Length: 406
Image (cartoon, rainbow, N blue to C red; front, top):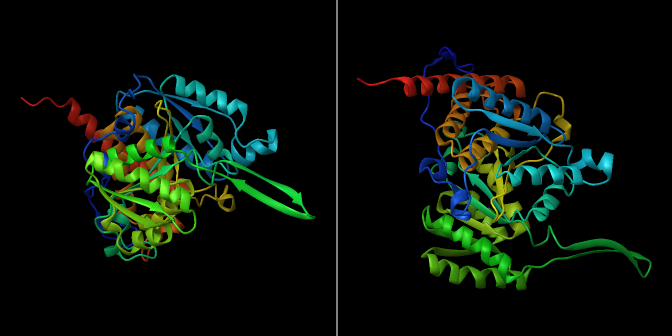
C-alpha cells in the first residue's frame, strides 16, 4: 500500500499511527488464562467455527474472513474455517427455534476440539439460549476507544482520553434467563417472568472479575439496584466484599442508573465493572458511546470449560441488510480478540487493531462514525482499506521475521 492522501484533508498520510491497545493486548495478557487457567491454546491448524448470523451478519463476517485470508497469504499460518447453520430469526423461520439442534451439534463439535466460535449477530433468544446451553457464564466487553475515534460521536475527545474499561457480565442467571410466559388470569393476559441468582453463580463471576482486576489496576465496580431488586443486589454485594478482600481489590458499588451516568461523566475512573445479566447488557451498550458507535463494540463469552464465542456488541441491523452500509469494525475487532485470546496470536491481533485505527485516522468512515471532512464509504470499501493496511503491516512483520542480523 503506497502512502495515500487523506480523503478529508488532502494531506499525505505517510505512516502508521501509534496503536491504541486494550490492557490485555498491551501486556500480552490472555484474559482466558485468568478466567480459566486450564485453558489451552489450540495447535495448528487453527480451527474457527463460523456462524454468519442474520441481517448484516453475513456481510460483516465475510469481510472479517478476508482478514484471515491476508494473514494466511503473508504469514506461515493456516486457518480451518467451518461454517454452521442459521441462527436467530432466520432459524426461527425454518425450525421455530432461534438456536437449532443443528447449531448446537455444530458448536459442540467445535468446542470439543478446543476451538472457538466467531458469531455474527443473531436475534430473538439465540444468544441467551446459546449461553445457557454451553454455560457461557462470563461475558467480557472491552471498552478501549481507538485514538482515531477521538471526537467522533456525541462525546468530546477529553471524555474518552485514557479510557480502558473491561465490562464483565454474568450470562447464566438474572432477568434474561429463568421462567417466563403469558397466561389468562381473571380475563386478562398475565405476563410473568421469574428469575434468580444463587451463591455459586455470583461467586464464580465475582472471582473472575477480581482476578481480572488484579491483573489490571486493582479496581472493581459492582453494579446493583438495591431499591429495585433488593435480594439479588444484596447477594451480589455480599459476594463481592469477601472476593475483593481476598484478592486485594478496591471495591466500588454503584446503582445501575448512576453507573451508566458515571461511566460517561468520568469514564477514566473505571477499571473492571461486573454486573448481573441485564445490568451488564445495559452498562456495555451505554459504554459503547465511549467507542464512538455501537458498530465499534465487540465482546467474548466464556465457559469454565474453555468454550469461547466471539461476537459484536450490536445487533443484526436488518434495516441495513444488503445496503453496503454496515460498520464492520466491531466484528473485525471480535476476530482480533479471538486470535489473541484463543490462539495467542498477539502480534497479529495488534496488527488488525492498528490497521483499523490507521484506516479511520486516514479519513475512511462508515456513516455511523462520520466526522466533518471524512470520506463516507460502504462496508466493502472501508473493509478493503483495512485489509490493504493489514497486508502492508503483515508484509513488514514477515520481512522482519526473515531478516537475519549479522
